[in-house]
Image (cartoon, rainbow, N blue to C red; front, side):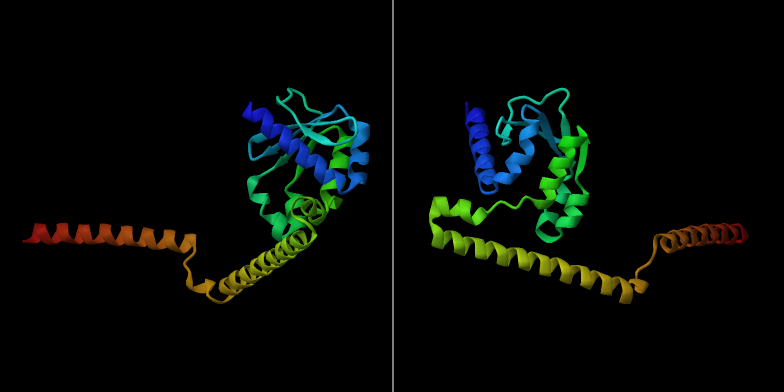
Length: 193
């Protein structure tokens, strides 16, 4: 019961997103009746493509979906900072025509979330929320760039003071040899006394 309610609500949400960009549903319409499985790090979400081209959550995962979209969970945050890198983590398997359209939508579909939000909370509040989201996204990109720059500088400047795995293994071997030499020396000294 709750599962059905959630599935219906999520399908309505997807439909509302596609309503903000009708061309996206038109691209999927030739594939109506097709099944798609989104695999997020092993968590599989089944979809069907409705008669009007809108994606709808399905009840059961099909044995042979027309398309499987694989993406690791680690790629999700990349959509905030580096969309191109996130898209490179996307792997499509199955019907090539459907895969082409889904890939096109992944690169180009940008629903008007501000318009969608304005239907719920009004124009002014929706505009403010959207502006805050854009600012947060800019902050996330800037933070990621700064972190990358800092790590690069650390590796270039300070990295030479960090021991490599090979150096640590050599040191460990030398300590073991020294321990053996000290043990042999102690045994010789014990025999002489």
